Image 1 (cartoon, rainbow, N blue to C red):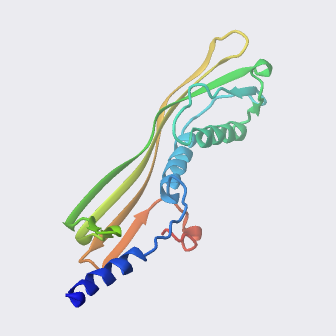
Image 2: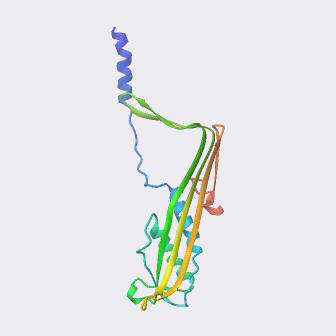
Image 3: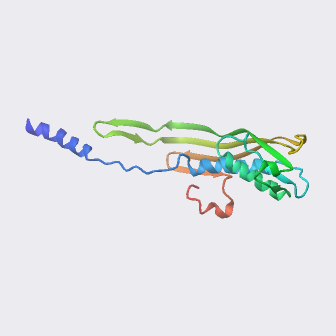
Amino acid sequence: MLRSLFLPATLCLLLAACSTQRTTEPGRTATEQLLFSTAAERAADKLAFNLPEGSKVFVDPAYAEGTDSKYLLGTIRDRILRQGGDLVDDKGKAEIVIEPRIGASSVDRDKTLFGIPDFGVPIPLAGQVQMPEIALFKRDTQQGVIKVAATAYNAKTGLLVQSLDPVYGFAHKKEWAALIFFSWDTNDLVPEPAREEWVGK
């Protein structure tokens, strides 16, 4: 009788002694951040501002809300400088006010799996153990999408200077797996010279 109780009791003690190490990570992965920022750069490149050389320009952030909107606004400011604008941080000192507006700023995901998805197995006194997926074939596509338009008007009169139709920026990463053991990915996020340095490649 004692022997029959000894084994379950020992197993319970061993399970109770298991420890879990928690690693603190940012809310979003580097891949997701790259999807946003790369798409934002490509959208900003398409905004063809027609500014007189040396115009004092204020970029109004009031209508640019959304994920990574500050990065998009910073990129637009950079493009204005490249096109000859003179940025000012005070709307009262501006000759031209530019209002960017964000229509979309998100990541779409499409996943196809032939196999067994990952799943949790409850273990008494130890919580849940996550079992990995078994992929005979898998395609996991993530695409960053940015839609942005802009209006420029005279800071003194409020009259329209230029209205820019919406432009779009896209970035993608695709992960593939086949026959359980083979996996690879393709992306347009990292320039070729830096690709070997990217651990998440």
